[in-house]
Amino acid sequence: MRKLILAAGMALALSGTPGAFAQELSSTPLTHFTADNVTALLTKIGAQNVSSAKDTDGITTIAFEASGQKFRGMLLVCKQQPNCLGLLLGVAVAAEGGTFSAEIVNSFNGSAPFGKAYRSKDGTAVVLFRYVIADYGILEANVASNVANFTGMPAAFARHLSSQTIASIQDGKPATVNLTSTMSATAAAAEAKASITAKAAKAVALKLPAAPEHGELTSFLETFAKDPAYKISK
Figure 1 (cartoon, rainbow, N blue to C red):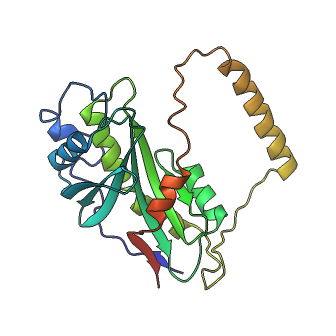
Figure 2 (figure 1 turned 45 degrees about the vertical axis):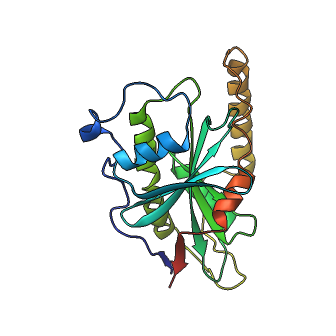
């Protein structure tokens, strides 16, 4: 069995809620994300070593630390520089000498309502991420809560791994988990189809503003996967 080497107390001082910082956070909604307002907010809520830089494609990346651990953010959907509508928070976990199976990632996603895990194309890393959008305005306290919860994701992923039955994570062999269900595959598929059909009918009547720009994140998540901050170790 292998485990994630993680420092205790992953969350920021907010611990998921703005509580004691309420008076320091602005009540004016942020309509866009910029390197300046994101780094200022991260510093305000207790992140350390906050910095920002642009890559060769002109995309702004913001690095910061919480409890000595490194995290990154990326500003996306920038219709008018330097204003951006999307903030992608991501941190990678790597499997030393092995790969993560799709089952492990899928089971985590099924149990984690706040953030999600993305399995890199080669399976050697899992990117834990949270995508925050500023469309129509978002309060600083909301962003702070998103960041604080996000910094707790590696610990949540570690707990999930420890709860699974891992068969192997050796060279060239993907880690696997035993998943059981009292429902047959055919029955489960029929139930899922019925549920989707019912929800689709109701969704037709909804009139929501379209935001197609917040779509494909795969290429950006792959960039996170190339620089893992955490590793699986014996």
